[in-house]
Structures are given as C-alpha cells and as structure tokens.
Amino acid sequence: MEDCIFCKIVDGEIPCFTIYEDERVLAFADINPINTGHTLIIPKSHAENIWEIGEDDLTAVHRASRRLAGAMQRALQPDGIAMLQLNGRAVNQLVMHYHLHLIPRKADDPALSMTEWELVPGDMKVIEETARNIADAC
Ligand code: 5GP
Ligand code: ZN
Image (cartoon, rainbow, N blue to C red; front, side, top):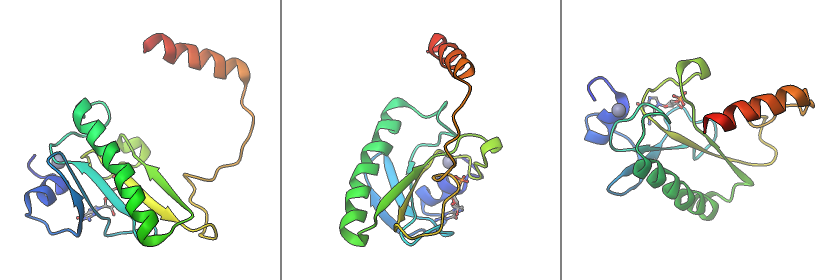
C-alpha cells in the first residue's frame, strides 16, 4: 500500500535489518528498540490490524513468532520475551500495518508498563457481564 512504511520495507524501498523471512512474513529489527533485540514481525501483504489481517497471514506471523522466540533464546538468553501487538490509534498503534513486537527482557530490566501492572481485583459483576457480552458476540 502506498505511503505505508512497512510496505516500503517489504518492497525494499526502505532498508531494514532482516532477521527472518518466508513467503508470507518478514521479521526485522525495530529501529527504536525498547531492549536489545526488539524485533517486529509483519505480514508481507498489507493489513492494518487484527480486524483486517487474513487468517493465513495471522497464523504465519504467530508461527514465525515461535521460531524467532527460539532464536532469541539461543542468541540472547533473555529471561523472558514480551510479545505486544497494538490495534488502533487509541492504543498508540503508530504504524498502520499489522505488526507483532518481540521484546526480549532480562529480569532486572526496568519495568515495561504494558507488562507490569498492579493486580487490583475487579468488580465481579462487571467482569461477568462484560465476559458474557463479548461471548455472545463471538
Ligand atoms: P506501534 O505501531 O506498535 O506503536 O510501533 C511501531 C514500531 O515501528 C515502533 O516500535 C517503531 O520504532 C517502529 N518503526 C517505525 N518506523 C520504522 C522504520 O522505518 N524501520 C523500523 N525498523 N522500525 C520502525
Ligand atoms: Zn503496509
């Protein structure tokens, strides 16, 4: 898609450090890494978000995530790997081409606000009603 940075990376118009690719996906280094090894996996075919991406591309991205996680384990020995995927500007999706972040972490790394939140018990009635509401829409 025109004017999409990640499509331009797929087409080779913008350079990247490729880490893995197959016929459906490309994994490359994030140029603003939260941690050393921060990697993005994208479908080669443009889709904006979880609502748009095709099932086969979605599967391919997440199959690749396991391969990449194994490679990171061998190459970097992280204590954990955060996987993050944002959908929509309201949750700070900046590049509107589906991408999965793989962020290797050491145990003593500073907190990532998306992975470390305080556990505060919710209102069980609201939890139940909301769960039912979503379940009915499945
Ligand atoms: P999000 O849309 O999930 O908020 O994050 C977009 C990610 O894409 C950011 O982590 C940002 O650093 C990364 N990014 C944006 N432009 C480029 C680019 O041109 N090359 C690479 N390798 N990463 C990019
Ligand atoms: Zn795109």
